[in-house]
Image (tube, rainbow, N blue to C red; front, top):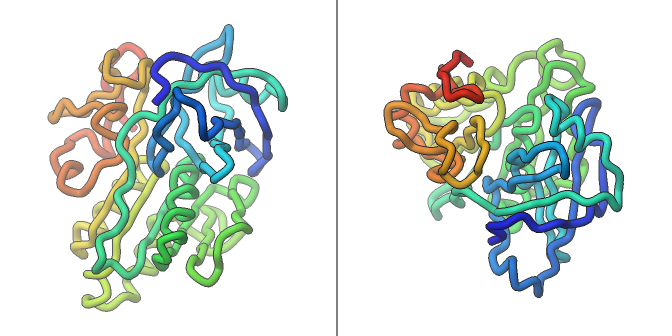
Length: 279
């Protein structure tokens, strides 16, 4: 793990859709600073020199030592990232946080529900699930077709992708949570016992998926997003009431049991001052 900022060179930049880009960089396998490979659901802190530092979920890691993360331009630091080019330098530290647990042996199918940059950790998770030959159904939602990240690299023998858009401009019309509910309603009660659901994206969407899973008694894991200044449990901006759990340190991935105790889940987050605000 890199605990202090390590300067690395951007290896590639890919336009994933109209407002999201993927950045990749190389961490050599023999690098003494990086003895642990990242796992799906973990994040890194990305520093743009002279601007700021922001948390980014890891969207891929390959055997060559290339790591990737996805960025949506929503603020000063992400705007600065968007203006960088291949060969420019950024700083990273991590990986931090908990990660998605692989399904138990009795699970036969995994559903991955996401939208926006929330598809980033799910993209990496889908790759790992495929390597373990676990049947995977990905449900990706966006407002319009231009906001969808189209994945043409999945193993179609094991995985399936269902796209949906709010306006129906591509795939099924409706929210990702609605599409998930429609698909899951087609499963028998016996099959529901052999399903695990993973989600990342807008928290209201995740909360709706969580409610569906609670009703049908489906195993569930979610990756939460909160304001993070430190990434290692110091600033407290990512604390979740009433548990006091820190998303950066105790998360970002939480299971159903823990989420049931979080009154803030699906309702509130904190701003830069620590004040609680509605989602």
